[in-house]
Length: 367
View (cartoon, rainbow, N blue to C red):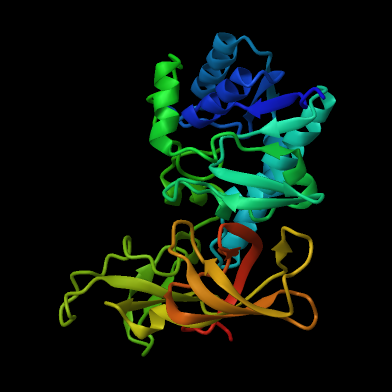
């Protein structure tokens, strides 16, 4: 049987370039699509959509595959960025990369692949898939330093059924070696960082275009006034930099950190050193996306991450009776549990799913 025609999301980076190369070498019928998802480019910015589009087209030309360009800026704004701003305004710290995968890369992109007559999509994500008995399991990428299953946990069976991740079984140095030996012009291009599709920006002035600064007090848990913040949207739990109170006399000399945000009175709670207010052992979530479609059990033990690249943490998970989410109890206290970020659950190499953190038992957490 002829393998499915496959459309690669060519971002202009080395990972997607090698993805297309490997599929071409495997004899697949391959196309490449560049997604433009943001209308503005910073003048002189580190990563421009135009330069990325040129690199993506160069890869397609070199490999001799059809190339398509699509503008998904409206879909990105409606499905990702408006939610991102609303979460910041509510005092939470969202992760737009996760929503971007669910709403754009594995939804809008899939719809356009269908329209173009393709039957699968491929991306340069460092993750793997295992197809068993009509189900698709999401597995960690082989490279522990690049594994991106955390960012893919919100995908469902239909979306994963469409996907392939050809570099998920490779280490990053191997990907660059393959690109170099093949003469791909992106072989030495550095990895992109920053907000999904928007790129590397100076975060505070960028967000200030959309959410006006709203200054308020910075206080210790005991109520001592330490200064003034520019707006809660510019800060997140565990943050060290940007507080401008490090040289305050009478302190221990240790760094200051954000412990919590008090939305009701627009107050930023700050602590010095490795303060107990930075830690919690219990959290609750919003609704969970279980990749298999159902929870493993009403209560179970697994490992989890509350941020990308965190080491696995053992925890007990209990499904809430109303089905709205889960409660999680960690074996060890966790630093900077952050509402708006995602907790992602694992059983060995299998990503079970995850959801957005709603509250914790850390200072002002709400549990």
